[in-house]
Image 1 (cartoon, rainbow, N blue to C red):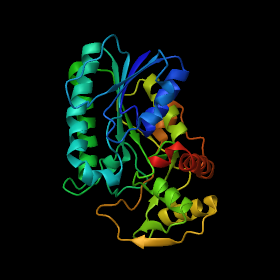
Image 2: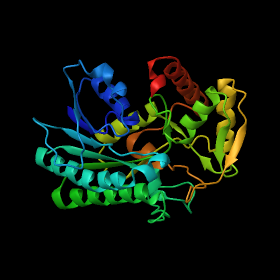
Image 3: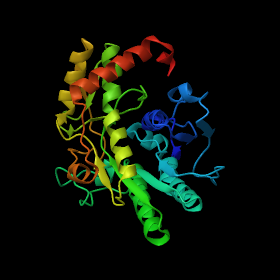
Image 4: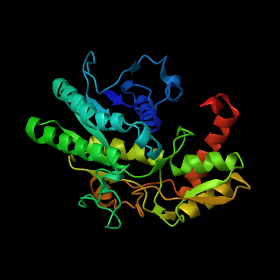
Length: 317
């Protein structure tokens, strides 16, 4: 296949590039490098099956040649980005989704939207299945991301119904692994960076809020299976095997890094979800998918990568 990935220089997008190229596909990446990094895809730049275009997908889009699949992964995704890039997040979720769906229609390509567990907001149902409509504050600080993704899902389904585009929607739960930005602002890179530096590890609130965490290779496998499946409605991809409090997650990372860091508390941000746990019944049934990498193994791999980044050329990022 010839595959376009928007946001392909980002954390998850770069892992998808790696997988598709290994499987023999041709990959085109569009990324404006707002939060993506050339370093994430540098190894592929000499590959004749790989092409990188620095471009903002909220503008008019054109790609020469045929496309078989478009994966729309462009968007800042960290809570640290919501205040800095709020309007850009809204634009890439709305205009960017519109442009990429229009390109899919013009090319006769299949389309996959990277949505998020944030569509569930601060959930009142636990765990969260795809049938739950969510509890979102549209004018809160997180609303720029939550509502951009909810709008993107609506537009994707509208193009499917009205124009017959063969679409997929993946709702991604907390995912981690190599190539996360050290200044990402999310819990795992924050905790690892602070612990490796021997700094205080910052937990928001009392640390009792819970998350399930999924390793990036499991997510990539789930996305690949969803691409091959005949499923147009949203599918959760996440790891429900172990629900961790933020304090327990911080303690694990301090132990795995051998750090002497202590845990300190900061005020809980507005609308921070108290719980987040995927119901993956649909993924198991329709995709034959479930996660393989547990939190301990995944965290150790991720810490190893952060250690290498800190000691090597990546220390400047």
